[in-house]
Image (cartoon, rainbow, N blue to C red):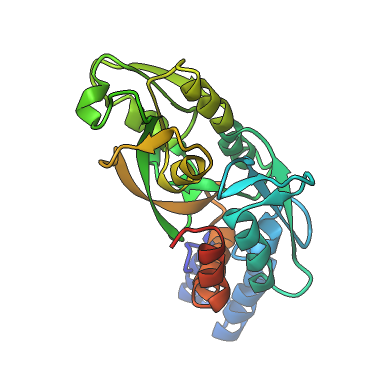
Length: 271
């Protein structure tokens, strides 16, 4: 990536001025420019933008299967977890991934404040989030999940109903577009599911793959056919960490060209 380098620009102007008044030779000007260039920090070095040396610190919210959740033994599992571990090899020899679990609505703050290098937790593009977004790695949609016997079969049936979505998600913004419905933001997706099953909400908004995962485990739940929002899933980083995001995009491109990427989607039923 080409960037404007103030130090080099200043050195060039100084050298030009000296040559015009005959106070320096062209060879001296070249030496001055070279010295200035060597003093400029390597702004495009992604390693300098990491929280920890040789470690890619990833913030993740493990309440969103099949993207991320806790296994019965307490370990992290899911498509994003497997992908994150795979991406490490494309950063260079000796790099590892360290996942940091937190609620979804705090991940952006953690990335913005430098507590985490990346956020990998089913993020979809939203310009209001004030973070850098990677190239997409999955197609997605926000859908509404309801009880099978609720009498709700279309988005139009949600008029006057109570709706919940995960706080800080694009599903939250999508839910707010439903006219005449009562909206509630909930931190934990699993809490929303239990509340839906008890009738606390008439419908909840989730990522399509996540909703399908919950339907597979709960025969009394169904997904409305019409999506609220069609979108794509990305990795997020702090704004200004361009070298790191360039490296992420390179790693994603390499990973998505492999059989491991296809196998990961098949494993977590994201095909």
